[in-house]
Length: 125
Ligand SMILES: [Zn+2]
Image (cartoon, rainbow, N blue to C red; front, side, top):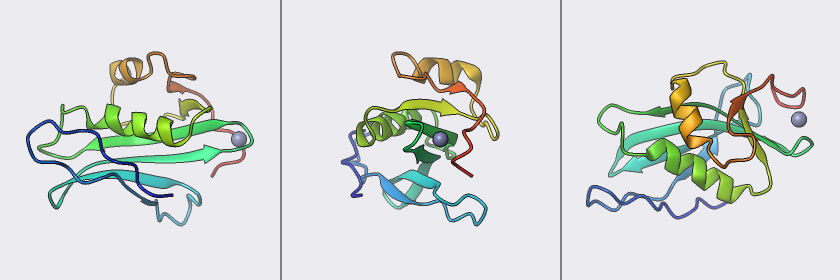
């Protein structure tokens, strides 16, 4: 899959497109990371995996790095994933939250599944 064009352009410096790569954790086969780099700095990462059987996208641990918080990178990243994988419901398993519930409530508005917490299906590690 080719990284989608990165739409976020606040701040004047055109950020690079999203970078999408395997999560690389031995115990989490199939998980991927979508990251944003601004200039050469890692600004944001979120882990995700798609279950084709359940039509669910699981996301976990969205994290904006120091200096890149409160710019809407998490919302933009989740939106880019929804565009890349249409027709899914979106949930979190809540295992490694670094964002508060108000965050998920806000990004989950009008999203199928709403990023609500749910026990992870048996198909993803
Ligand atoms: Zn499943």
